[in-house]
Image (tube, rainbow, N blue to C red):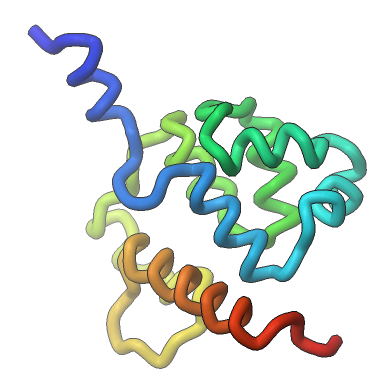
Length: 134
């Protein structure tokens, strides 16, 4: 018999928590909280997004996740997985997929953790340079 704590642990997606992931993607896209709110046509307020990013809201509705996936250009399934709605994809189900969201010259598909690490590093590099001219 599993305890509530064990059940919660097994349903959480591995890797980066949802809030941290959303913050890193937003930083990588060089968007402010208000810019995300505008791009989402008010579906997600900047205050709500801030609470998500700080982990105060752990499981937003699928509608919110779908909107954020569109704004950020990330797979909806990734956000659903990180929120705990769906199980992580296994390597056998992703074998024929492209390399993922991050364009690389890797011979093999990147794991979610590798993609997240690349996105974090890119956000770090961009934060050191300041905003890029558009």
